[in-house]
Structure formats: C-alpha cells, structure tokens
Amino acid sequence: MAAWGERLAGVRGVLLDISGVLYDSGEGGGVPIAGSVEAVARLKQSRLKVRFCTNESQKSRGHLVGLLRHLGYDISEGEVTAPAPAACLILRERGLRPHLLVHDGVRSEFAQVDTSNPNCVVIADAGEDFSYQNMNKAFQVLMELENPVLISLGRGRYYKETSGLMLDVGAYTKALEYACGIEAEVVGKPSPEFFKSALQQMGVEAHQAVMIGDDIVGDVGGAQRCGMRALQVRTGKFSPKCGA
Image (tube, rainbow, N blue to C red):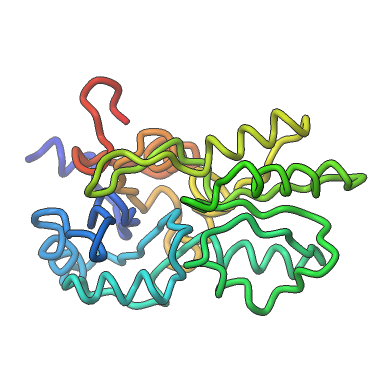
C-alpha cells in the first residue's frame, strides 16, 4: 500500500478510458465491466477530478453518454473528451472541408461542418462501411489534392467487443498513408494535443494526473509521453502475451 501511495502522490485528477475499461461494446449496447460502475462512483465521491478520455468514433458523444448512463454510470456529456468534436474544431479553424469516411453513428457530430468540394479526408472507425469502394473513394479524394490532408480519429489497432476483438481505424489509416505517401494527423489518443485538451478541461497539470486504460500504446504510452502517470487495466483488449 505504501508503494502505491508513493506512486500516486500528488495526483489531483484521473482520466478514464471508456471502451475496455468501463464497458465492452456490442449487441444491445454492450455490458459494463465488473466493478467499474462502483469504481467511477467512488472516484467521483473522492477529492479527485475525473474526466473520461475516449477514442470512440462509432457513436456521437451524446449517444455514448446516454448508453453509459443507461448502464448505471454517473457521467455527463461535458465530462467526455472525444475525437469527433475535437476534429470539428480543427476543421473550422483551418477552413477544411472533409470527405467523411466515418460510421453513420458519429456523422451527426459533423452536421455543422461544410463537406462540399472536399479538401481533406476524415477517417474514423467506420465498421462495416470500410468497404473497398469507400476506401478507394477516400484514396481518390486525397490523390486529387495538391496538399492532401488526412485526419484520423485515433490510431488504435484493435479493440474488444462482447463478440471478440475488432479491427480499429489505425489499420485503415495506415493503408491510406501507404497508398498516398502521406502521414495522417491524429485527433485522439495517443496525440499529445488530445491529452493536453483533456487536462486543460479538467484543470490539472500533466504531472498531477493519471490515465487509466486498456491500450498500452494509445492510453499508457501516450499519457506517459505527455508527462502523466498511467495504469493499464487487465480488461478490454489487454493480453498477458503482449500487454495490449
């Protein structure tokens, strides 16, 4: 106990991943991970500030929060840092008009964004919409641009649903990077800017925060590179073979 006390000394805020930490998504909305509802409640009753930091890009932030509240979590939309709203801010600030390769469940987040005559591509976890036709269309848009811009909502390799492991957006982003000879801009974990935004919204410095996630690269590694402490849970996609 003393060792844990020393490791967490000075912590004022906790960033929680959602998928694989709070719940596993799937048919019927998914299932909460044992003990996670109670853990969130205890954290919120403590002196610590709590924020949820997710790469979820198949659901709008409102839909995700509604689902989690239905599962018993004390969570509000304003407590969630998610990549789609962050991407919309970047698009507006830079005058970018995206071709969207995204899941229908998150498309509403881009309702106020101009998508006419695209000058960039935004790719997210499109699920079944990752067809050859849709990937090739995104490729064609990028190749027609003088200065192609590819924005990826996260860079995860895979995640866990109740039915098993699922391929994530990172694999498809890599395919477009390779085909077009470009490097994507990542909005979401492990992007330092994404973590810094969550910390700013929580009102704590990096050295005062701990990130809790199931992804050794996106959650743990990304947080540590920003100066945070990080803990990997043994739920979600965690594997004792590789730690991820």
